[in-house]
Length: 162
Image (cartoon, rainbow, N blue to C red; front, side, top):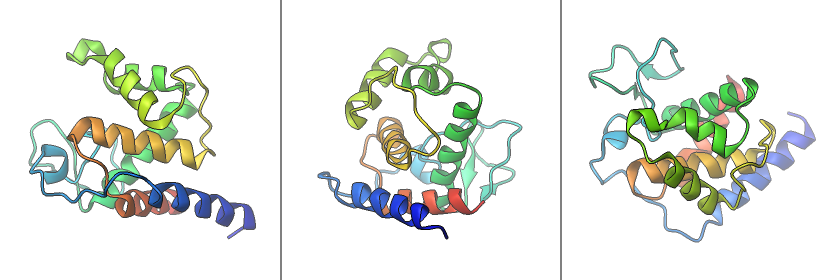
């Protein structure tokens, strides 16, 4: 692995593990945790590594582990950024659109507030710290509890490998 990638991973681990909030375990019984899908990614024709097919949930994907669920979130954000949907504002208007009954503006403000990233700031796929922050904030918004930092890091590592 190249030196720059190790430095990036070290910085990512430092940010994730220095979170001032307590790590939460999957005791909430929430749908996202039952499905090991912390982003509550809806069923689609896209198949992610670690996805359980067919999903027994009528609307949402299910994964083999939370790490694979977080990996799917990183992959989805990567697809958004590659499509030019590279700000929190644009991402969340696609991820949680008002047409699905979401309070998208509240969602945008929540993720922006959790990450400290302006809603209109362009996010790079190479900005591991911003991506991890967005993934953690989406997970918290979807599930009402703080993401397990180790599971997020495991998901990010899976994202990097395939």
